[in-house]
Image 1 (cartoon, rainbow, N blue to C red):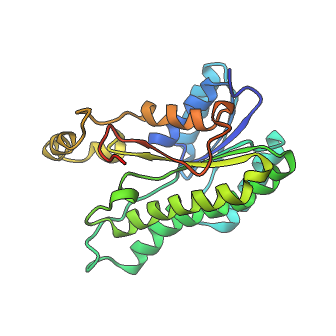
Image 2 (cartoon, helix red, strand yellow):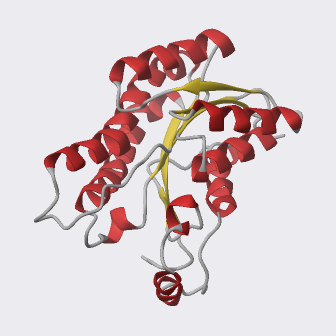
Length: 247
C-alpha cells in the first residue's frame, strides 16, 4: 500500500477521470476526500471505496466559487488532519468556434479548469509547507499541448495548467513538494461517449496504439506521480495519449 497514511483531495471526483483517480488512490492505501458538485454521485464513489475496505468522505464543491474552495479545504483538513496529495481534475467544456464563442463560456471554462487549480493549490499549500511534503497533480490535456479547433477556451485553460504546474514546481520544490501534470489524450469517459461512432473511429486512426485510452490508464499515471516513487520528478507533463502527440 504505497499511499498508506496519505490523504488525497480530488476535485471533479464524481465521475470519469476524477472518479477513477479516487478509486485508484484509495486502492493504493490513501484516504480520499472526494469533491464535486454532484453529491449523489460522490456518495456512490465513497460507498464503493468503503465497500473495498478503504476510507473516504464526500465534499460537495463548486470549484469556480472561491469561498467554497476555501471552506471545503478547511473542512477536509479539520476531518483528516492534513492533505498530502492534491489532484486538480475538475473540468468542463463549452465548445464553439472563437468567432461565435460567448464571453460567459470563455469565463466559465477558464474559471473551472484553471482558476480553480490555482485556488486549490493556494489553499492546500500551507499545510503541505508545514509538513514539508506534498504531491500536486494537475490534469491537463493533449489539446493543451497541440490545440484543437472549436475549443479555444478549453485548450487555453489546459495550456495554462501546464504553465501553472511548472511555476508551482519551482516555488514549492525546496519543501519537498512536487507538482506535475498528466495530459490525457482521447479517453473513454461519459464526455466522449456522446460523440459519434465516426468521430471515434477517426480519432483512433490518429493514435499509434490504435485505441482510445481508459480511465485506468490515466489514474495509474496519477497514482505514480502521487507516490514516493516519483519523488525526484517535478514540473513534468506526463502524456497518456497512446502516441497521439510525441516530443
